[in-house]
Length: 74
Image (cartoon, rainbow, N blue to C red; front, side):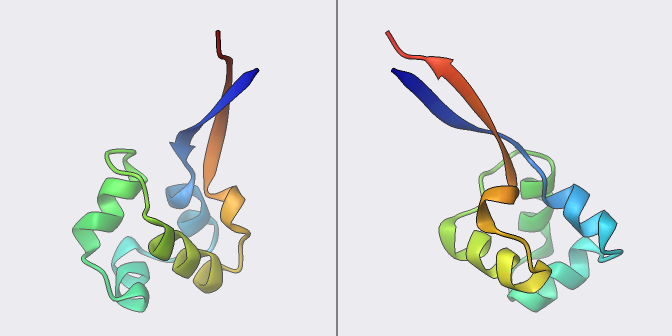
């Protein structure tokens, strides 16, 4: 059976492509801009409510915010 886990967060890439700063994104989501930095630097995983808000703000499906890693489970 395959095991799926979250890989690299793609939030930074999406913000850059939309020319939106981390500070502006944080303001729109009403979260601390330091947390956005943690997400962009893969230091923390986005909780579901932040992921959902990011999806709405950036008009990107939720499954497009992370790369997925697939491995075999033994």
